[in-house]
Amino acid sequence: MRDVLDRAEIVTLDKRYVWHPYTEMSSYIETTEPLVIVRAKGSRLYDADGRSYLDANSSWWVASLGHGHPRLLQALEDQARELAHCALAGITHPQAAYLAKELVSVAPPGLSHVFYSDNGSTAVEVALKMAVQYFAQNGEPRRHRFLALEGAFHGDTVGVASLGGVEVFRRPFAGILFDCVHVPSPGDASAYEQAFDALSRAIEHGADELAAVVLEPLVQGSSGMRIYDAEYLRHARTLCDRHGILLVLDEVFTGYGRTGTMWASEQAGIVPDFLCMAKGYSGGMFPMAATLTTDRIFEGFLGDKSRAFYYGHTYTGNPLGAAVAREVLRIYRDENIIEGIAPRARKIADTFARMANLPGVASARSLGMIGALDLQDEASGYLAPIGWRVSEEARKRGVYLRPLGNVIYVTPPINIAESELDELLGKVEEAVGVVAGS
Ligand SMILES: *Cc1c(COP(=O)(O)O)cnc(C)c1O
Image (cartoon, rainbow, N blue to C red; front, side, top):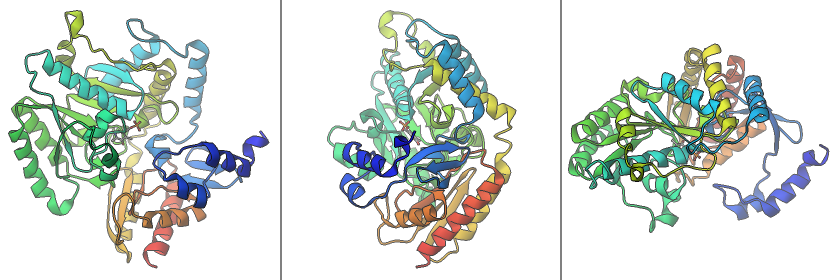
């Protein structure tokens, strides 16, 4: 263990060999003193110097039950002793079968078939490919286009990046991404009506070419926690039904209680044709994901062998991930995780409403276990530096917080202890106050 905890050596090796995601490496190497996290428990991260940090972001939005939940550890360990991998192409294993039944029972009604993959990007990629193939072999081959929102984020593979609307992420690949219809985000409150109407026009215009509309329901996460009304989702569902277009809801971030209900789509009272889940799905314990769909789509792939869905990642339906995902669902039930959200969500809402009045804060918002605010700055968007100053102040106070440009947000574990949530929110408020007021 001794060398594992030698902070200086770890940082030297890291800077020499590791190429970090979403990170400009020269400034990282020259100026960043990275946190070196050696373990985590519940809502706290511990660094190599023994300091602890409340995890304001649930470790990139995955650790919805906190870190190291003893029941998830046990499930992973037990399953590892039995069976760690099974190919799933025409053979099966108990965890994949039981998990599929359990996911169908907690999903919105009508989603009755489960396709497994490895991560959020692939969960959406699966839905895109299924939608295109479904129409190709069921008499509507012209339907091969997708509609997505400006500021959308559905992952980083070339396929789902084509749907993406975060400009800095798209730009280098603009020449190879496939063409999508992008419509204005309903998350900009001052232009909500226009966005609502623009969706009708875009769908009517593309009605016979569109395969699917793809949305992050209720909140666009990566583009800055842009929250929008459930009415927009109902509108999208109605328009899709009217024109025979499929609706894909990417609940990779919003699922598992993040917005206050198990699924964000519940709050709109709609059911999509595809529901994509990852992140909270396996509680940060194992990379795994699933795409749920309807009888109608499933049946469109039956018959001749050429009609099969030729797609499947090596770790699809992995037994370790499946065992963990089943235990996640049991914990949600046994520990009344969804019922526990309301009092926590109130604390988040109160704190962010108060911070909206701080000098230097342009606006604030909250929904379920998400609180976000925009800092006033000359630069806005993902590359704005000001958020990192808040992050630095938070870190001094024992909170780990990753900003989205000038947007400061918290997405703590759904089951964070209320006393820890108070501490977290108090420290975030202090950090924002120091930077925004300066
Ligand atoms: C994180 C995220 C993804 C991508 O998930 P990965 O596991 O990083 O591939 C897709 N959609 C949404 C809404 C996300 O937040």
